[in-house]
Length: 449
Image (cartoon, rainbow, N blue to C red; front, side, top):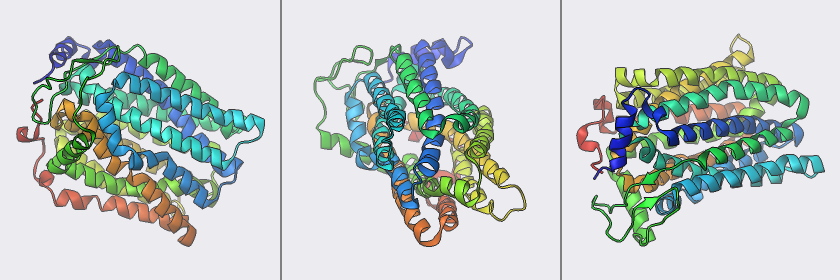
């Protein structure tokens, strides 16, 4: 049955300010804002530190990129089972502590003169694990904070703040890099994750009673409060929980198709991320500041996407909006290798690529996040989220290692074209599913609990 919290927050949101009237959502929003600042600084700092400070090879860059997402491949499935059993608020807090400590070690090591590529690899792996658990807990707790009916609206709010930071962050980081160097920018990232921890600590959310796979209340479990860390006394056996989550994803037409298309896109994204900094900074010869500026300007597409996401969803339908956005991503991938031959400054092509990525991914996310929440019972949110991310995010390290191998054998340009081809293949799972024939999510596909 639907938690009473859904009704309460829905009525609260109808008074005029939507999800912003929910105090816990405002705190989560602020935490996301702080975390987004750190991620933008950290992403650029990693690339510049590895390429220009430590002179990492193509293979080392591919390993760093792979380790950053390896947790999804190794722990992606069981993480959902664990998060379903734990206080999600506590998971969020722990993840932020781990990220802040791991990242703070980079500037410390640099000042002491002992920073190495190996340490960047360790930091990438550790923060990747923290990112995994934070993401699963964040997705799982959002419906309890704002109600399932308002997840799309909440997602749009979060995307707006995230993409605003993507505009300011890389450009500012690029300017700071000219004076301080990549390793020291990691200090800003550590501070922002500490701020995110502070905001999350103020979240107060009561999670609904766990139910079994049939939708009936579990008599052996107590109502779980994320604020006080109360836990269920008894749980479904681990492997049974695992099979339940995987089986639900595999058996649902929407989740199954999104899973396959997302995996293809992220295979391409993994190969793309492994060589992007090398291609832009070495092959094209852009400076770190110009690279940051291109990324910053390109992030304006995310603002456009966040503002237009709900309108696109209403115009095309939530299902069709995801299909169109996913199938258009190959154009964003292709703009980067085209930069070497187009009769425009290289920075223009990189900026256009970033614009397309930001706009399309944000619009797709606004529609797909609401769909995922509507088709998944609350009791399975953690397991379904982790099963989905195991495949989609687990594809990133696989793509990164393949990209590194292809780049070593043929060069960075061919690797970028491979990424574009993999993204273009996302049309295949959609064409083989019933999703191409519907605009909106049919009621028969929605979860009842």
